[in-house]
Image (cartoon, one colour):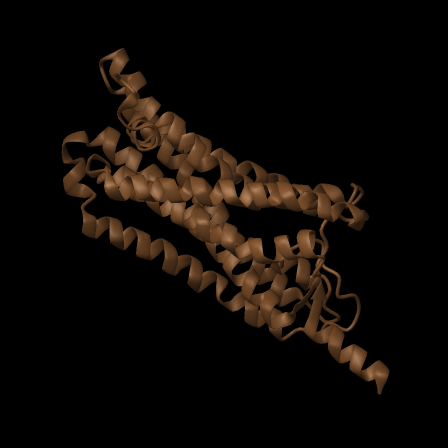
Length: 316
């Protein structure tokens, strides 16, 4: 009876891992993680507040930036509960239902972020190619529809994932590789045929990540073509400068993602710390640095933040 109960327990719970092979070091990661999450929340919250209160920022570019900040906040909130519980409180056990719920939100907001980056590229193309019609093309109604389409696409593609995991039996090891739940991580622990999960996971990656990457490449080809058609060198540089922050955001999202994918596929011989580190960078770095990039590179946001914290002392 005890063995039977233990088997059922393994079916219904997972054990999360902080730093593979070094559980005694987990506590020392708690303070940096708390600081990282606090900085992420503060930075993205400031971006949202500044865009809301500063009327000069009520433009399509900044509405899309607000979408990015909201997505970064949501992605961080998705991973934070288990990350903090593992490293700070040493609470490692998580039920299957909690795990697949977290899995859904992490993958969903990752897909939303990819879609928002594509929408921002479209915004830059319209602004450079059709500057006089920019406001009439990207009206509030169009922006809302784009945001809704990005969210709906991600939800519809990711929604089957929890059900595909829920149907699998887990009768062997229940130890995950990270301090949060991912589809590919939970799938490998199943003691059943996972070909359906593998195929669907691959199709989801193709229809979100690969497709968005191709659209981004095409968008920047069209942007570059439009920029080269501008007669003035100064205006060409100015147009390219408006794309710099977005390019940084794209690199922050896709470089860790590609690195994590390559390591999971070809890095079987590497230390288990490496895949964990890359997955953490993919989840934690973009939400942390996106507000910094846009605050430093966007004059209107930078000036509004300086005014908020320094009042009227600046310029007197």
